[in-house]
Every structure is written in structure tokens, then in C-alpha cells.
Amino acid sequence: MRLFTTLERRKVQLDYVKALIIKYVMCLAVLWLVLGVFYNVAFGHIFALSLILTPVTFILGDLFILPRFENWGATIADFLMVFAVVWFYSAYFINETFPALTAAALSALIISVGEIFFHRYVDNRILHVQDDTIDRDRQMNIDNRNLQTEFGEEIDPPTKDEDKL
View 1 (spheres, rainbow, N blue to C red):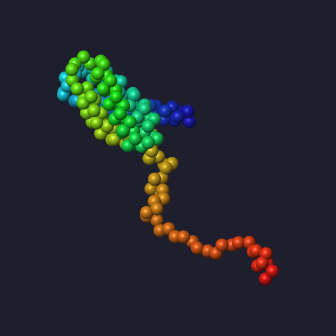
View 2: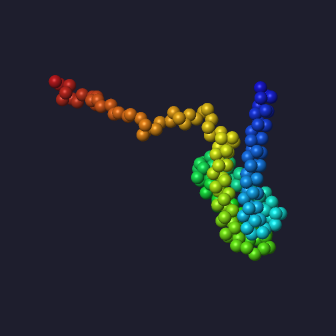
View 3: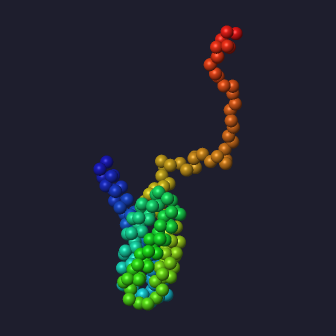
């Protein structure tokens, strides 16, 4: 039994590592496309920015916000986090003149589109939303049910006047 628990724990750890690698590659690719290709930012800055963005958005957006607010809430939160981090890093650490606000908005928008699909992956692989413990197909959908109201007479205790009869 102990061996099974250890193997299961390692599988979960590998799922987290795999998700972090996927998210890092996505951030690196988008930032290289936006900052590197369009704005000629050095790859070292893009690499560092990806290293900062990946754990911040994974922990806050995917592990904390996604289970509580579903995909739309986590996507909005990821957009805001990516926008803030890219803008702050671009404004204070990159010594080139380019529109940092526009670059941050474009980066955040493209990463947010990718996050929609990444959140589905995290839901299925890490958070296990489609577990056997939750049967989403059997949940009551009122639109598809034929519901009826049962009518009957109320049973009231007899009043004093009725007892005399």
C-alpha cells in the first residue's frame, strides 16, 4: 500500500512539473513573439520575464483562482497579472524605448487566449474536475425535466367547533 501511495504522489508531482513546463514554453513563445520580434527586446529579458511570469500566474491564477472562479475568472486574473508584470518589468528593467503599455497589453491578450486552453488542461490533469466523485451528467437540469406539483388537502387539526359536531 505504501508503494502505491508513493507512485501516486510522484505521478501528481510530474503532472505539476509538466503543467509548469507547458506554461513556461507558452509564455516564452508569446513573449519572444511580441517583445522579441516586434520590439527587439533581448532574449535574456524575455527569458527572465518568462521565469517570473510562470510561477506567479501558475500559483495565483491556476491553483488559487481557477478552482474558485472557473475558467473565465482565472483568464481575467491571468490577463491582469501578465499585463502588470510585463509592463512593470518593461518599464523598469529594459533600457530600450518602446511602448511598454502596448507591448504588455498585446502580450497579456495573447497569453490569455492560450490560458483558456491551459485551464482546461489544469482542470482535467491537476484539479481533477472530471472525477468519478462528481457526476455532472446526472445533475438536475430543470429545463429538461417534467416537473409536476402535487395537490392535496391540508390536514389541519379539528377546531373546537368541529369537535362538537
